[in-house]
Image 1: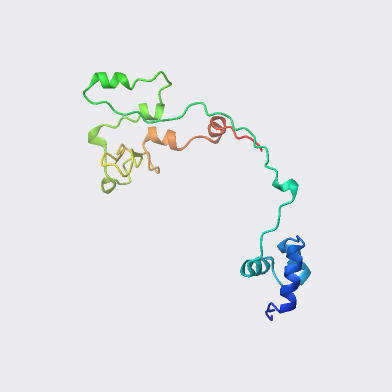
Image 2: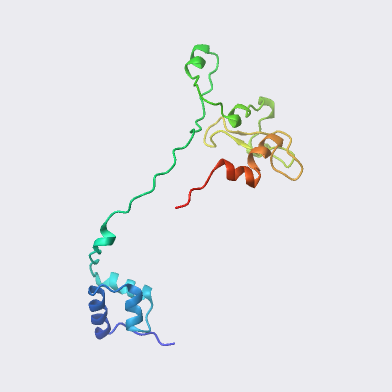
Length: 169
């Protein structure tokens, strides 16, 4: 296969077609033996200006409103020792079942190097924090998580679809 070069005549024809408003695909078909991407590359190298948009494409599209989320999950600060501080963080909201049930005993918590196949690999906290740890509970056979964290990680398809309804556009 021989590669065609951009002759002066082909470049002039490209410029005329580009200024005429043809798309790169249409120009490639018109010139023959050249790809759409080759046309785009040549237009870019020649520094040809972008064309004015048609009045219909210049008008902004009306966006569909997204449904408001029911509740945002925010981790609550842990109050230690100061009960007045603990009362200050109380919020009149539905408790987060994952965070509420996610109390892991100190002697069960493991670092990355302490994990093995028999321990739960569920990460707890921010990995960049010194308080970060893994659950360390007894994992279920063939799974990396304990029973509690497996219920969170592996939800039946029907439950996932009910929890996050998808909107069609």
